[in-house]
Image 1 (cartoon, rainbow, N blue to C red):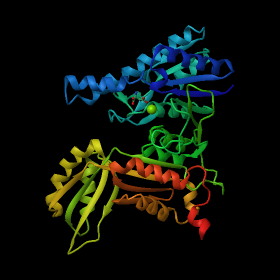
Image 2: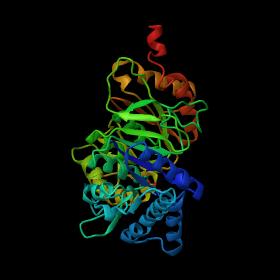
Image 3: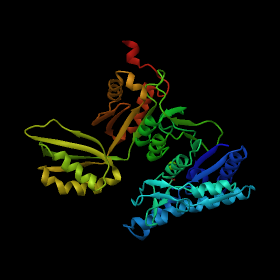
Image 4: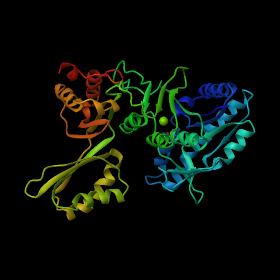
Length: 414
Ligand code: ASP
Ligand code: MG
């Protein structure tokens, strides 16, 4: 008998009919002879609504109380889904994060899972129950409710699949899988059949909002096979597994854009050892995540340092930097809230030269200026003006034909 962990996102349970549809799908999986643990997100936009509601009460809600509040969304959906399964005549029980024993650190609103107890899950499966777990939540060592960050139900599911050694973790969503580009931006963008953990990590962190980054990290660390698929149709979706290292790997599997970043430039800092460490040390201490960093060639002992970060951390970072500016001899800070990051991703680029050159040429031909560049073995990102983000994704998709093109145009020509 296989053990299947499934996860249903908010849009898959946004109304009673959809909840019944999900219940039917879970029951079907059970009837096929499997044990099923399903993780569910809050109904529709519940989490956003709860956050908006708090803002009516206070601008600086306690993080602990935010978690107490936000975790209720998933408690509601898990109970309703369980009832829907009951009315189909199957045995099922809902469990919150704390009832399962999902232990996290105490970093409210972005807690990390430290340990999952399998006792309760095994006991309930043993009784023949389908288990519906409220996603996105756990408890810390003092019994405080914690949440795992936006999209955290994905991580709950993959972590449960790993703890229970499930055969597969199916992530059900409102799209057919992971796409080579956002279909709303690129007409005709296609679903990717198979992607490696590393490619998916790059795609996830670059703004392809299909899966929470941590879920993929978890999957990679513990080798959990993840299948992202639609809750509305039966078709296979996208399988996320380890890299096969096939010669036939496409050069690029995806083109993404992230429009949630902002850029800070610290002007004319002294060019001597310890400056970058002072700046980024202070940011790290305040828990600000920095992304692309560029330091200019120095002129007369001074240099500019620019970096990007999540837009909603801009104000906090600005405060932090203001406090260190004096200490690094800078003449000031510039904040730019109008940027976007476009990226191309693919393990195939490890073995294909000329990928970066072609990306830069493609953007240049479209009249798009590149402000910063960052690369990894399997990714190239460019920071550009936000107003060009859509266009950039479209032209890059057209030139690289992600998922398909195994030879680059300029390779063919040479
Ligand atoms: N309900 C939470 C959110 O909207 C968690 C999730 O959906 O995965 O972020
Ligand atoms: Mg999600």
